[in-house]
Length: 330
Image 1: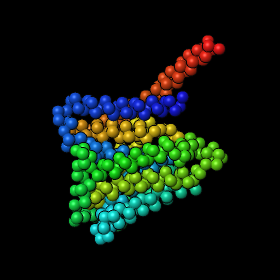
Image 2: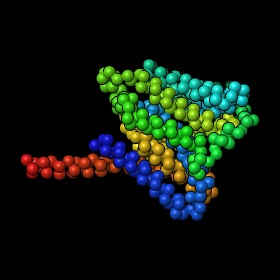
Image 3: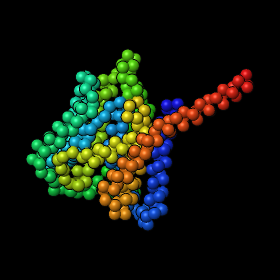
């Protein structure tokens, strides 16, 4: 019954995203022009990538606030190192730093049983401070912006190299979580870490790995975004963090851990991207977009309990009918 309920949550998120897209197309003249769809895919792919990494940590029963600091830090490292050593080296260094933050988050959470919220608040502050220290508080720019132009050049009309990289990575993470032993281990850890440990599962390795995945995916998003802008800025991207959390919860990831599908998270990211894109198209301020996103999140949370009961009753009725048919035929 539990699996069925969370499957329903995934389909609800997908249905809401498709409904929002249909409404946006219906009420917005010119919404489907290639330029706007291109912008929609750009924002959606980045949000889905980072939200997918966060969702993996949440499925493991933990939380990662540090992505709000890792993302801009990776971007400014990519730009700063890329100026002198080349873009490829800049990206590699940025991802090594991001992975190191993930290792620190996972190890402290697992080894010392420190709540991940506390750990990742610390690393959020640390990465933010490191960014200001590296740059002296200034915006770092890259004189060579040709690579950024290529990253955002249209591919097939609605995609770009940047969005394609993000979509391929989130598809790979979805495959890992749904088709591999690692994905099963992460769900077991999120459901009951003590039972998973007594069963012989590598709980520590899984815990560290999910934090590395979250940090690296945020690092990739930050690096690509900075290269696209040919600039990196120190600070923390808290607004984007809130969007990723909202996408994960809308997509059906349980705050208690162990449940949720990345396909639902992708649907949640699509819903938020469509809302933001459509409202911006009509000239709505950012505050209005955030307000609507918050209302949708609260509505889904309020419907969570009654929906769980509804699915439970429906499954009980189906089970009862199956039993009656079975008894009638034996």
